[in-house]
Amino acid sequence: MTRQRHPLEDLTALLDGALPSDRAAEVERHLAACAACRADERRLRGAVAALASLPPPPDLPPFFGARLEARLREERERGRRPALGRRLSGLAAAIPHPRLLAVAGAAAAAALVAGMALRSWLDTRAMVRNLDLLQDYETVSAVGVDTPEDARIVAQLDQLEPEEGTP
Amino acid sequence: MGPDPDAALMLAFQQGDEGAFRALFERHARAMLAFCHHFVRDGARAEELAQDVFVNLYRARDRYRPSARFKTFLYRVAANHCLNELRRSERASRHAAGDEAPPDPDSLPSSAAAPDEVAQGKALEAAVRDLLARLPEKQRAALVLCRFEGLSYEEIAQVLETTVSAVKSLVHRATVAAAEALSAFEAPLGAVGHR
Image 1 (cartoon, rainbow over the protein chains, first blue to last red):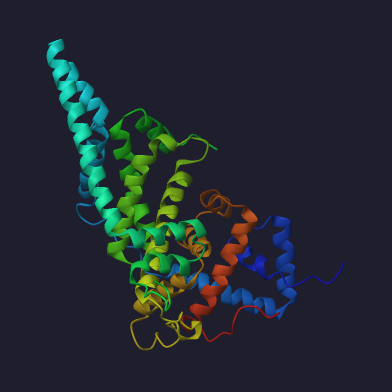
Image 2 (cartoon, rainbow over the protein chains, first blue to last red; image 1 turned 120 degrees about the vertical axis):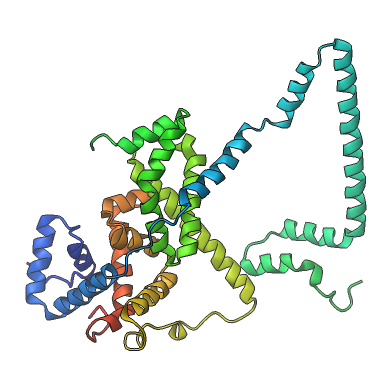
């Protein structure tokens, strides 16, 4: 048999009872013959004992369950709240007369178009105001953001001083 | 593998039985709080994290498949959440630190002087907190699951979705780091490893 290498990684597994029995016996034979490995094994055992001697974790605090229940109620509420489309169709179903339904549909469509137009106008104004910044972001997105340093620069684009000679 | 009563509760919850979820909470709330506490060594933060674990479990009910033991599934939800939160807070603190140079590993808080200066229990607690903060995240998770939660290497492999031999290596490296960080709490010994 060739001389066995020091089974350092197996020492921890031996302490944890995680080695197959034949390998455990082999490592124990090595330990019996190797003072250096016995010293390592003692240190590892000491660390395991120190960790086991930590004070126990705190008990469940009062109202732990009640606080969770409150959060879950919110979850359920969110789950129960129907999507906008379903709410609109529910509203339409509640209107009895076909003519009223048509009126309600036309009003909803008009409101939707007006809202979109207003949003688009506001977006355009914001774009015009921040055209330079927008172009910077477009450049960045074309080049790509690969490192945390890139991401930091992108986050601070609006604070960058223009280089000399650039308009 | 015998029948898993928790898996049956989780399946009942999937079918809409909210009482089954409450039963799961009652069976595992204490263990999850302990797990989160072991992970972050901070009472208030552990409480938040443990609450989040159950909210995540509530949301993830449709993803549960009874192919693995429920306990494995729950620890996976908890470990992933704790690791994500640690990543997020580390990113936030790095961002807050701005352009400061990374800390010199030699200047990291040391446990060496603690035992005779403050009460042994508190000093050990602080040393373990420092140790956990320094460990790579997979080692940290493996150490907590092995040393504090008492999971077998096979169970840890399932929770961390890796191999048993990878877990063996993670647990060993984390235990070596613990031996070095906690050497002040034992008789003076050198570093582990004589090669």
